Image (cartoon, rainbow, N blue to C red; front, top):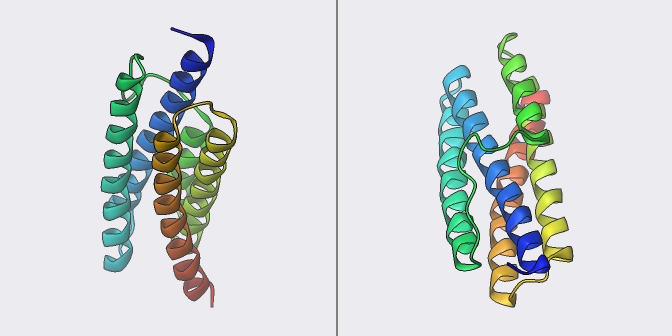
Length: 151
């Protein structure tokens, strides 16, 4: 595998792990909040992350790489989602939303870095932009809800 191709596979695998961490975090959040609307949003976001990870794994295979699977790596997002779990202890929706927001901001940043630095076909950059847009939409929704909870 060429150097740039390996770099792309490694970065895409990082994004797979970010999606996996997000999925786990959202599903944990859904189980630990009492608000029905938040449960629905968190479950939907968790499902979305499963789909994003699967799409990335498919692209990694197309590049000739081996896709990461759940539990392959530990990253910064995992630590952020652990903070989400800590926020559950106080049963504080605002605290949970704040940590979810922080996790999504970090995910958007990682996608930006990948889009800006990877030498991959344009269709793959378009896929990354589409995925980043979905994460940004969720982030915007979380911010909107957080602003009403904080009021």
